[in-house]
Image 1 (cartoon, rainbow, N blue to C red):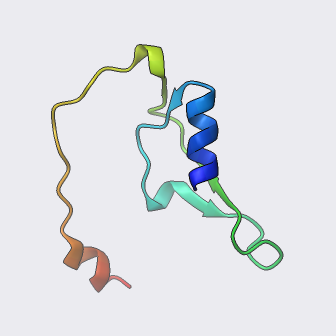
Image 2: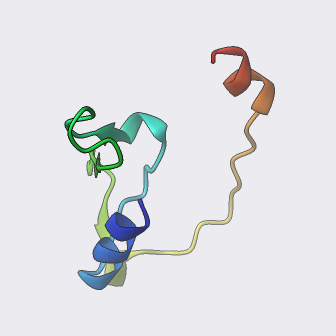
Length: 67
């Protein structure tokens, strides 16, 4: 994940919708730790980005109940 985010930063792209649903395992049996970041529908160039003033608060109990 860190490699993917570092690459996006180096090419000046902000994903803007990074969540577990947008991270996919690639060939899990042969390369168990390789992932792909998907869904760039909200992505933008860093030069076009603005600073947001809102926060997203997650209810961690919902996340763990589904596991």
